[in-house]
Image (cartoon, rainbow, N blue to C red; front, side, top):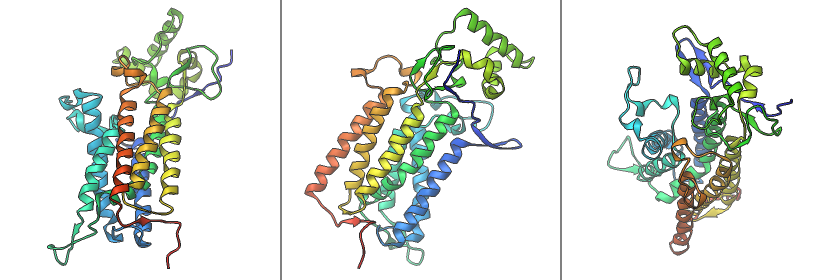
Length: 347
């Protein structure tokens, strides 16, 4: 039997420096914010945005805080409220702060960015005269320029989700069954509520493998986690015990990252009233999210109860699309001074 699916044994840790582990998930944030910084500096130096070049770093700091706080709080409030009260004996002690273990909500991050954009739009106090501010502009102009940078971080974030083996896609072939070449087998599914039931022979093989890998002090769950962490070494034994799935994270990297990025940059090629780019970012992202989540499993706690067949993430995206449409209607009646237009020649 040939199991054609790709076996995802990628290590979520990019670099191990003694006790310090640098994860791909963290690097995705670094790449996203770094790319956004250089884009904003470029736009500012060309005079296409109201943000002075020397204030880009200040704006970026606010955006970082918005993404991290909004994303984490959004995840806790919508997907896992136990994080609000959970504590542990290891740093950082409060579960809500344990971002390195995953658990960020993209819609929460978007809300956090919105708050950061409001603070940025108020401008920054001048060092030579704190009574004056520089870089003051409209809120929608700030959201426009952030919309041009956002797809970079989303793209890298979804790639990190793939490396981590999280946000799993729908099953296309069960354990031990032949699968399409484009599907992916994630050993990370083992031991989770999203893993399909194994037959007695498969379960016996998994238990024997866990016993082989586990240390003397490990229980079954700890041994299973150790096995998943070293899945690449045991690929031949694990492959028949893992289902094949849609690579939903890669679908979303293309849809929410690349596709949305192309759309908003094409729109920003011409000068637009503040809010137009933001509106199309909201609409395009929402459509991409609703479509790509067709092949993605909902979070385990929301596996049941999908109103009209849509997940919670899809319904939040539908709301985003309506907000985007509302902004377009508002801009038609309250058109401001047109900005951006990166492809237009300046006199």
